[in-house]
Length: 272
Image (cartoon, rainbow, N blue to C red; front, side, top):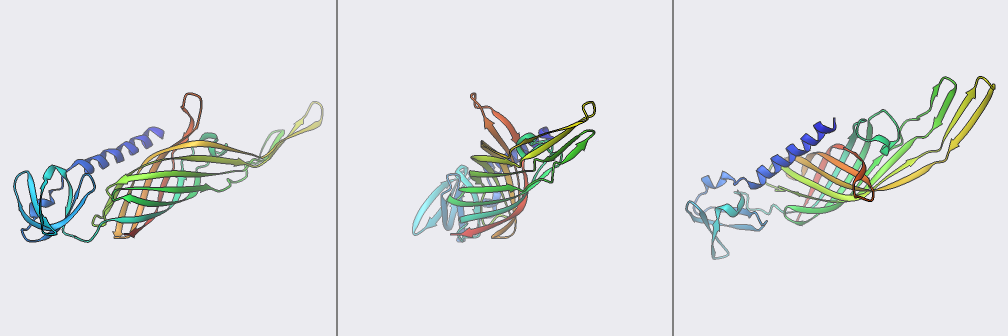
């Protein structure tokens, strides 16, 4: 399962970089005298009137200034001359962690874990944002079980993440799809309720009991992932994301464990 998930993340990376470094062919239909919005790879935005072009350059007139732009520097060209810049992005996810991925990070349970995730991000440049993410995984069902002469009760577990992260992507109001990379760091905290174990010794005909107190463990976590937002309308999108969250780092900065949350939800963009 983990190999399949990592291949999915790599596919996101490949699609993303192909889109980032492939020059848009929209310039083939440029009309002299029409206004266009050009976005360069350095995220600079130019809105002006098309004057002329040759094999390698495009000439635009903006604010009575004639500019010659190298085609190799152009990320995209759009007939929509309104600003494409976003100010804030809010994401609300339902979160799913496959049972084979999380080990003791959500308690020793054989069931998949479901949670809720909220992220708020601020665009400090046109294609990049920073934000904070809260993820909560409610108490699992009781781990109480009975096996022969032993009875175990309690031990329910819940957890939460607080992660500072940022995205770098193709964020553009005029596009139906945004693809982005996600990188973050924060904490992963696990709380486990107290538990009790009762054992019956058939030879001594006696019951023995011992209990384990509740505990909370907190680990540093690093987050790496990718996502896609499909926008049926310009400000609202359907968001899919997959991340690799590694935590519990030791002396040699290697993670002790990791889990792979798969997220699906809705996004809302606030414009500048």
